[in-house]
Image (tube, rainbow, N blue to C red; front, side, top):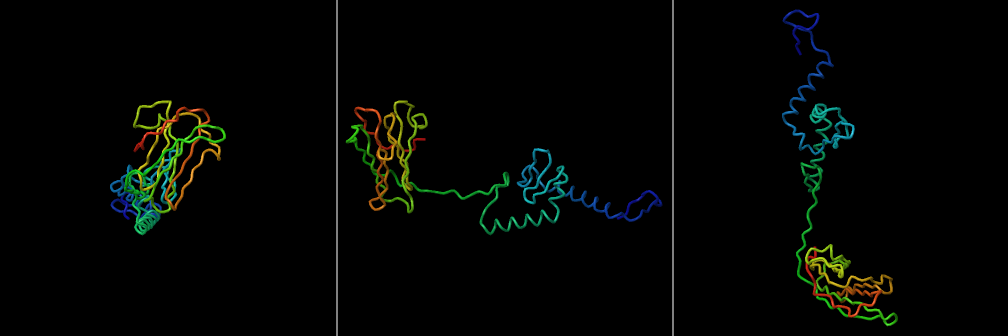
Length: 231
């Protein structure tokens, strides 16, 4: 490398640059190349920490400024790690989102086949004489290794009807059937194990759920037919 007009050198000529000077010049060239080719705004591996420094999430290195990080991206370590990451993603069949650096998982697509059959019966506890409800939901085409689930939902949580504090909903779900919801009185339920019962029979493909109220509810209303998509 030729440097003209260096101290102690003759005009029109210069001594060879030292190793440190060559290294600094090389880094400056890399920086200019990186500024032209790297888009920091969409770099998934660049992260600015709470100290104001820049971190490379791929190589786990820390840099004082963007220029230092850009030089790093053109270096052997970053390029090697980048090639390894791309090869692994190609092998695993994953795709990286450039804007966030996250790996997108394939969405699970389920084709709904309609509502399950159901029967709701008013019951009465033979000992306490409290009223309750017995739900019997049929899932003849339920997906393998799937167990039906249930949960209670406040009237203010659903998005289908106007909220009414006197009522709540009990939901039943099992793939590939649509989720159904029943509108029931919003009164305290006896949640003890012997009073609140649920059972899934894989042979008859029927899910049974029993609730008993702590207060007298006269008459206990029969829930409305299944409401689809209560959200």
